[in-house]
Length: 135
Image (cartoon, rainbow, N blue to C red; front, side, top):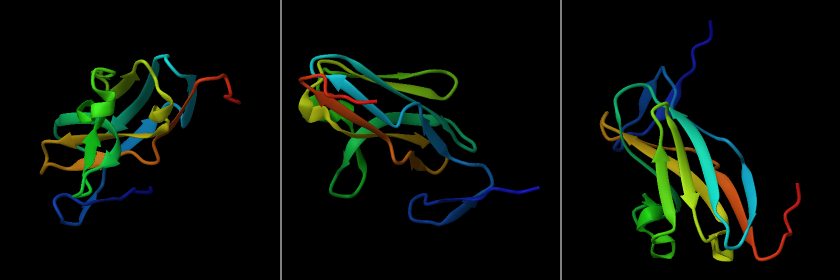
C-alpha cells in the first residue's frame, strides 16, 4: 500500500502530513465577455480541524501573503464568495472588465496552527470586449 506524504509549512516549521491538502479547480481557464458575470469554482480537502477562512486572490502583499479579492479596490462590490457544506467554493465576479483578466487562486486557513493552503496553478480568466475566445 502506498502512503502519500505532503509537505506543509505552518508558521515557518516543516511538517509531514499523512493526509493531503488539495484544491481542485473545476476549469483551468475561462473566457468571457466584458460586462458579464462569471463563476469560478473549486473543491478542497484538508487533514483535520475546521476551516476558518476561505478566499480567492490574484496578488500577494509585501510580506508575500495573498490578498483577498473582497479587499481589493478594483473588485469592490463586484465579488461574492459562496462556500458550501461539502468543501466547495465559488467566486462570482460581476460586471467583468478586461483588466480582470488574470489567474485566480483559492486559499483557505484552518484552526490547526493557522495553516494556510493555496491551490496552484489556479484558474486563468480572460475577459474581452469582443468574442475572441477559442475552445
